[in-house]
Image (cartoon, rainbow, N blue to C red):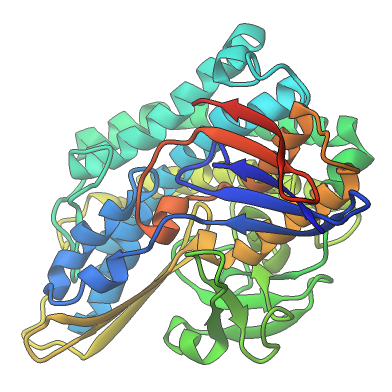
Length: 475
């Protein structure tokens, strides 16, 4: 008879998740599952609402990455209107998007991931948190707060709010950027760029010092998906969808309008979160990864000079175009943050950014619209179908965390099989399971559209199903 270990819920992620590990009679790992225990609801209760409400409504799925939903939804409603938005409006939306990437990547790296990277995966849980980072590395903790604050100031300047903005509307935006606001944001941008460059150096040094352990941690070959521009460069706001294999070879490229022909969604009885896959290969063979590491593995290059330089150094370190270890997500995340900051400066120095043509209008609308962009956690798809009154009759949201569902399950399985040799396990190992998931910076509330507390409960059962050990951690 099998034994079972439960980690419930996973901590230092957004939302509810549970890990179960099943052992055979000899105490070896037989199978593992990463369960998402919340139920998804937005796709259904969007039905009957008018499409112009979607950019404000769908972002309520989450308070961590509302900007991403806000902008992807607006792009979908542009398609329903059948309009091309003015250049100034597009650049202002991208400006907000870059602010979101800076704040979100900084939040994850400094507040959620750095305790494991800087203090050690086996450190005492009492110090293995942001408070411990503040005590041991106060300058880094302050840097993280300031970087996140800057990204949020970009969002607030454009929308009046740091969270759940009212800015992007079907056909454009509802507010311009004044010269005074532009100058205010430009004032600190060089510090932001320099600070993120220093942070890239920090994670690079950590990767080098950890050596093979960094490379091997939850490492596995997979497919990767992300947006690229017409030159194959990383594109976080608009572009074609590229799918690559574990050697970096391009398997497919397609537009957002064709995503349903390319991507299917598998359902498992033990999770409320779906499992997307590339249809031509089927499930699970066609499973893929998205997010910072996937985007760097897919793109040919990066257009901004400092991030381009860091991408070159990244690929020299791994000795290939493709990195497979899950910890490399943190390295890639900070290269992206540096690119986002550079792009912020480019946009702020563009004369169009203070233009006054903000919206395209239409008296007609099309029956459906699809909007895609790269959220901090990966490719985000919003797809709406409407009736003759403009009411939503069907909504499909494929969120970044959903794309990574299979990958997170695989990462947990690899760590469990490497370290579990029986029911008696150390607290540090339990954290390793969570570290594997945190590499992907999952937003389970976005993926299932609910919120909740995040205590941790681990229960170990013997072969007869009797509880032999229990560990509870409250957060």
